[in-house]
Figure 1: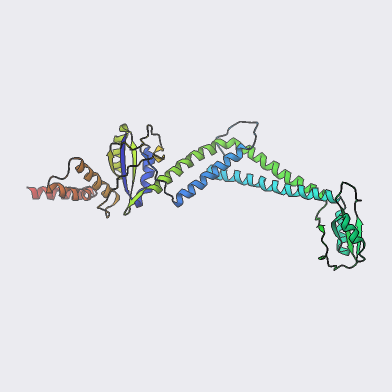
Figure 2 (figure 1 turned 90 degrees about the horizontal axis):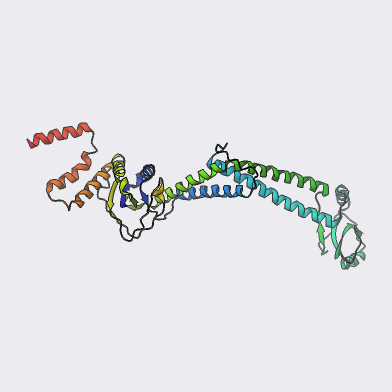
Length: 363
């Protein structure tokens, strides 16, 4: 393995890492900085994971896996999560209906239309009536008391109807538990049946989506790469608008990497790994975004900040080559150092013209 330092202008760092990802050779360490794109990538990854978990909760007897899904990636995940949310809300409504049903049974089944008509005509109320409250209310002349069920040893309270002698009766002075039903048992059962059908239909859809789980797994794998990529992109250390990363490259991939640097205009340096570096033993496609810990950081001070990306790369690579050859040994070499990055970026016609002028001057 060789240690590689990759240098790019900040405005080109995303393009650089995209090209580097296609190369699939360099394993770049992640400094764990955050960015908006990284947050979005992590949120999308969470949705995919939750969608897969939702499918795992549904038992499927048929294990046929269909690769081609009607929806893909996040669209499929969002549809699954929406279906799961439908089930969750329907179950909550079922729970409330069951509670309402049990309360209505406890109060005693009665015809709702009759009760509502009585309430409208007289202002009557349903109450929980204890034995003590019954004794107290029996002495009042402004209220008529009707028990809907007799007292027994097992009943702490019984349902009762209180009918006031006037419609605008003041109930504030009575410490009683009131009950105000809005539907009867039959209506509650109809609502329960409707909600349970919603749950059954949604569960059927979830079971169908299990056929496309392979698509979700693929999307999650791609999303993992995206999260790692954005992590590396956000981790690029900046020196006055220039981003750089440290990483590792296998020796057999150096020639391919150098050709890519020539085509993309990357500035780079190859070093021997430091003893403190945690060098990866194997690199795979897209593995450049995997996290590698390193305590050794080399900071570059870039002099030619006004150069374009390719000019900057030529400048740095040429400077590194001179450094490897034990420094600058003549003024001519220094002059060539300053002219070279500009010269290589000129059109070939301009290069030929400059060479002709140089030959004429030399002659």
